[in-house]
Image 1 (cartoon, rainbow, N blue to C red):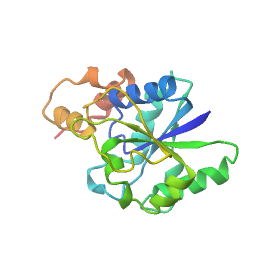
Image 2: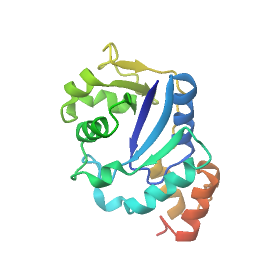
Image 3: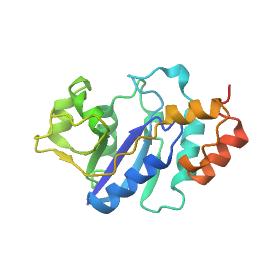
Image 4: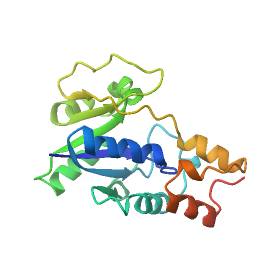
Length: 191
């Protein structure tokens, strides 16, 4: 049984993330899912991120009632920017008995050859891929390390939620309840 690593900025974590994690646990053969909060994705603009502490706190709130889900701040302790291969190497050294798998969207699979040391990742880890709207993709789909799932297509994005909050829209149903409360209390994402 594998530990799935769900990397992301989680700015903020939303119900789409939770649905995908639940699917991976129940239908993709994972024993647990770790939400790895990225302090800075090398492919994203750093200025738009809430502090890593607040994003980690929201993930912890979202998963606290789900014993097979865990919030991980492992990348906070590693050199920046964060590269997946470095995190995987570090985790494998720290937890040698665990078998790790990457959870990623089809859109990420399409650009996977741009990732640092992607060949090494494919050689040593399995990739559990969830579908994305308008992204069927054929890159890497036949690779023996790649498992394309039939997870529900979730088209909720953190950027949509941030924009809606800035426009004073009520988006509580898009967020785990405790996360929605925390965002309100802290006045996050308002203009």
